[in-house]
Length: 287
Image 1 (cartoon, rainbow, N blue to C red):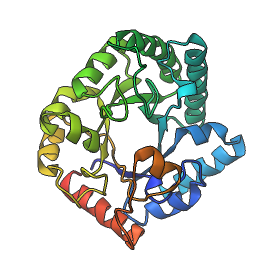
Image 2 (image 1 turned 120 degrees about the horizontal axis):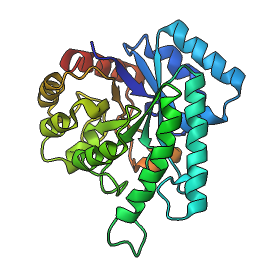
Image 3 (image 1 turned 45 degrees about the vertical axis):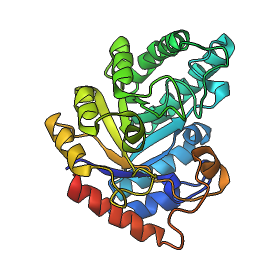
Image 4 (image 1 turned 180 degrees about the horizontal axis):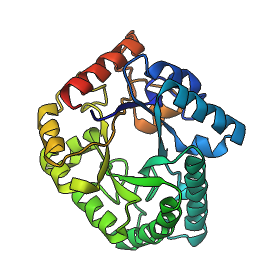
């Protein structure tokens, strides 16, 4: 059975929060994994990390880590000082995740988010080369730390370097490390890919994890994403990685602003019950 997870920000409108309430509830709701903010992990004390690790182990929950690097930590920056600052920050995160027992860091580990290209940019190769330079350095740390860096394929309205699976595949093949792989997301795929199934099959063994969300970022099972097609493609490539739903349904706060949620998508809903329903749907449909 493919493990099923959920991103903590489904319940909150802030990125930096206490993760323990979400860790304590997800097992009861039917999840195997909780994805948390990797940047917040860097800021935790060693004692806080030990408590989080112990709690996750006691609950039988796997942890994974997401990050949208900020412009001042952009590992693809043409400003060398910014790029080096981003690499140093990512190395801290890799070390922190290693302390937690290793695992996956996914998101814009290759650039920053949300992002628009520089005003004078007419082609992105120079920026991508800087990203590759940083990633070659980061995978050395990751390989020694039982950490996998999952390069997320993100739609054109939020990022510009890697918008399709084809672009991501070219990127990870240039790095050619088991610690640099691909994270696809059904919300972004709906915007950019001609076919969900073909993109998944194209990623093949490079696919490390799959983020799940409907076309409007509601939980899986509440919209029109072709889950049967996705299941067939996952079976075709023998995918056994985590399926982590990443619904964003609450307006307000930093999360709502960064994601662009300007209305509550599930007003007056019982958020826990809807999460449990989505977990059951994913296990039944994709598991």
